[in-house]
Amino acid sequence: MRSSPDIVIHTERLTKRYGKLLALDNLNLDVQRGEIFGYLGPNGAGKTTTIRLLLDFIRPTGGKSTVLGLDAQAQSVALHRNIGNLPGELSLWNQMTGWEVVRYLGGLRNGVDERYVSELAVRLEMDMTRKVKACSSGMKRKLGLIQALMHKPELLILDEPTNGLDPLVQQTFHKLMREVAAEGRTVFMSSHNLPEVEATCDRVGILREGRLRAVERISDLKQVRFRWMTLRVSGQADPTRFETLPGVSDVTHHNGTIRLRVTGELDPVIKAAAQHHVVDMAYEEPTLEEIFLEYYGEDKQS
Image (cartoon, rainbow, N blue to C red):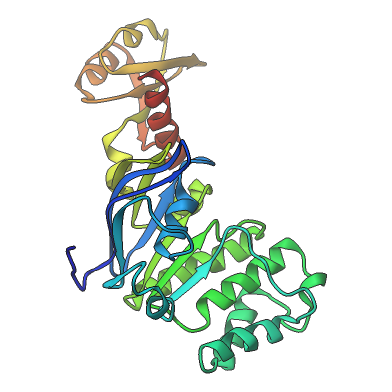
């Protein structure tokens, strides 16, 4: 198996079956040191299965993986010392306070830096004196983030990390993740929150029905698919000039404004626009959500 100090997660044909159900199908993936990697897909796509395999919570049906240069199965005990994990379904001890949870988990790691925990608690607006049973789902998520971050691990593996967090705390989370990456540490983050991924991640992997369909940088992914163009014209507008152009779809017209979706070259659109008196012209890159839906739309048709 390939090993490189710059590759934090490496999988080769990693596969998991549950009886007849193929949950993960021949996953080949590299995650680089110091990056924030977003792992995207709908429920049942195989995201949580991947995380559980990397953490050795379940064993693969086929293939293999290394994490931080260690075999994810054979050396999982040593590996866990350098990982911070936030599971999608977090179970904590109801009778403990936040501080008691942190100190207990810290004791398993030969201590914890309580000053750093206090700093995280302030930034995430978490009351560490409250018992878990009295915490809202959002507060429990904050506590889960604190326990994942508190030992400054080389790798963070986070499953839907901001579920239940209010927008201001989500912004704090984004900043924390960027700080982690700036220190040369790595984040592997499963998420349904596409605006969050777009704001935070360097690259994304798109998973569908257990198969990895694409791995792209956010900037590249937004450029390779399509763009929206808006033309504001004076006088009589003729949207039918655009509807038959190659690569153009979803043409709308209202009060002298023509909006259309363009795939490929802009030249045919520019030439058609020249037949009008153009007051203004703008184009915008698609959102990550639009790109994500585009991938799945194509799969449904194939």
